[in-house]
Structure formats: C-alpha cells, structure tokens
Length: 580
Image (cartoon, rainbow, N blue to C red; front, top):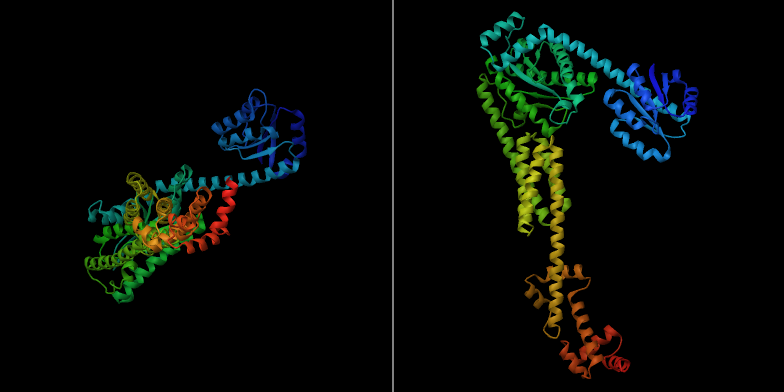
C-alpha cells in the first residue's frame, strides 16, 4: 500500500475526501490529514509518505510552498494539487516542482479516484524500475569483485598491446584463455541511448554502467555457447568482443573458413542485439573490425572496429557496420590473404574507390542544390538535400566527412547569396553559425535538418531581394513612361534597352509587379494626359494627339474612344462645359 497525506484547511473537505474514497481498493492508505502546509511538513518528516494531496490556499504555509519543500527534500513524493478556479493559473506555476496532477474544486470522488488510479500505475512502474536497478546494482558490485573484471583488463591489455604480448598471453593462459585460431577480429558494441547520438539525462547516465554490464553478460553467454571468443569491457564501459574462428578450423579450406568466420561474426552481433532488446528494450550498435590472421594484428582490428562504429552517425541507431563487407561491396576483397597487411591494403583500396564514387555523387548533388537556389526552387533544394542524406547514409560516412561535405555545401550557397547582392557581413555570420551548428548535431538527419533550415532562410532572403529588385525595375519603367510618353517611338524595346534587360524577362516581371502589361500602361498614361489637355486647354485634337505621342490623329481618336467610350471632341465638349 502507498501512503497518502491529505492537506486542506477546510475540515469538511478533508472529511468528504476521507470518507468517499475507496483507499484500500485503489492500493492506498490514508496515513493522515493536516490543515496547512506547516503541519504537513512536520508530518512527512516523521512518516514515509508517497503521495500528498494538497489545497493551494492555506494559512502559514500554502500548497505552492509545500510543493517546493517536498520537491527539494522528498523529490520522489507524488504531489496532487486541487484548487479553486480563480487559483488555477497560480497552481500551474507549481509545475517547476514536478506536480503530478491538478484538480479543480469541487473535486468529485470519481475524479479523484481516477487520478489515484493513474498515480498508482506510475508508482508501480517506478517501483518496478527501482527493483530492477537494485538487482543490477547488486550484480554489478559482485562483478566488480570477481575474476571477470581481471579477465576484461587482461583481454583489453592483450588487444591494445598495453603490455608485452608474452606477459599478456601468460596471464590469459592462467585464466584458461588460449589463442590457436586461423582468424581473429574485434567487435565494438555500444548502447545507442548512452552514445553521442542522444543527450542522456543524469539518471540515464547513472544507469549506463549497469546497462553495459547487462550487455556484457549477454555477449559473454552467447560467445560461450557458440565457442566464438570472449567478451570484455574497456575503460569507457564499451563492450568489446574478441572473436576467433576455432569452431571452423576443421573445414580445411581457408577461403571457406574465412567466409564462415565473417558470417558468424555478423550473426553473433545480430543475436546480441536481439537479446539486449528483449532484456532492456534498448538498441545496440556494433562495429566489426577487419579480419586478421595473427594476434599481433588485433590492435588494427580494434582500431577499425572503432572506426566502423563511428559510421553509426550516418546509419542511425541499431547498426552493425562491418568494414569487411564495405570492402566486399566493391569486389576487391575476393582472395584469402595469408598476410593481413596485404588484405588490409586491398581493403583500403576498395573503401577508397567507394569514397571516390561517393564524392562524385556529392559534387553532382551540390551542383543540383546550387541550381535550385539560383532558381529560387525550394522543392528542388529539398530534393537535393534528401539525395545528399540518402547517399551519405548509404555510404555510412563518418561524422567528420559529413561535416566537411555539408560545410562546403553551405559555403556554396552563401556564395550564391553574395553574388546576388545580399549583405556580405550577415552572410558570413550566418554561414559560420550554421557550420558550427552542423558540427554539434548528433546524427546525420539532424545535421541535414540544420542545412535545410539555412537553405530555406537563404531562399527567403533571395526571394525578398528579387521582389524588391522587380519592384524597383518596374518603378523605373513607370518613371520612364511618365517622362517619355509624348515620344511616338517609345516602345518596349526602347525601355528594355534603357533598363538593360531582355524584353521577355521584363514583360513577365512588369506584368507580375504592376498587374498590367507595358503597352497597357503606356496607352493608359497617354490617354490620361490627353484627357487632362482636353479638359484644361483649347488645343485641337491633332495637337493633343502629337503631345501625347500619337503621330496619327485618327488612330488617337480610335484609341481614345476605346478607352473612354467617347471621342476626343465629345469628351472635350462635356468636360470643358462642366469645368466652366
């Protein structure tokens, strides 16, 4: 039963809650009730309480102050606040004290019972996790004292060459560990939740050593079953597997032996992943190092295992990255190399070929993105960035290479902005800020997201500048018409020559900006000027036609009637009379 304390300054409220709740049926015991926060603090200091039900408005110490005290001194206590409607906003301020529930008065027995059911469920889950953690802690402490710790240190020293090989081998032989296999390799395992992919909170960080111990136990048990090698922990709690091919030594064919060993290495990592997920509900990533034929080469296998694990940045959690398979994809590792140095050299060549192909892909995609940005094409820009992400994920790029490629992409986009006339100082500041942000991201999708946001902002800035330039160009054209409308030769070609733009570009821009074509505006301007002259002067129609840019008076009359519905003579007669 979980212990509950009820705090309210109204005795009738306390009596009603005490009598109308099926405490035992809900899994609780009402240990006591208090009329203010001061009494409640004294009570919890003397009695173990898991849940506190408290009002807000009380003398001496109110519900908020009580919540603050419980949060600071008994953080595991569940706090449920009930208050009047007018106090509800005030009650919400208690969120910083991890208040679990808020209830508005008057509180019904049904409402409170439902809240208590949810609270019971949370407390049960917390208690379950605490018991699990206590069990792991106890087991872990035992592990720290037993031979497994010594064995881990000895295996780590052997792989890392931290001690003389002869001494390491003698120490391991005393533990019953011998090495008489054809092939070896190292695998590095890491629980994703505690890796650089995530920001683990303090509680998660405290659990990491215990969870790593669980992974170690599972790995050790499976390796023992398969007679495939040994598990050990390094100084960073990461699990290492020292794999060896002894169960395949009777196959007789070295090529077949090696292939079977590589396959078994992948399968054991997959089984460990499955068992860890069943036990902890957590994903594990693995990096498989190169296969070596001599224990003296184990350090190189360990280095490549660590490198393989770094490629999880692009591939995401739950990855098994096998550098041997990366090489095989290029078709270079097809022979059984007796000397591992030869094999490693060939494999490096295969990876280099793969990286060169990937670099060509990235150059093509960067050109696509640049073209999309120049055309203000947000859809094309996002498609190019999606293609970049997919290529990087497919090639399992390490974080450093991802950051270098994306930083170059950002610089290219910034150069387009500078060429378009955006402020250089602002461009430099934004460029450096986004490059720094990219390096801080914990996974490829987040890094790509940072670039997408930067490109979207750049397109917005370029679009604003383009709109501004379009308006400025259109206004210059309008001003030119205003000053030269009386010239009969004035036309689209003359204005475009003056502005220094093509007629097709200008026509589209002008229509989009002003809502009418260049010729529509020119005719409207000329007719408006003609109307003004007809109203305020006694000039003849042919004289007015010449003054507004029409060399043919008859054509002027046709256009004027079409625009106004009257001939120039009719218009003059009506408007001059009205003017008088």
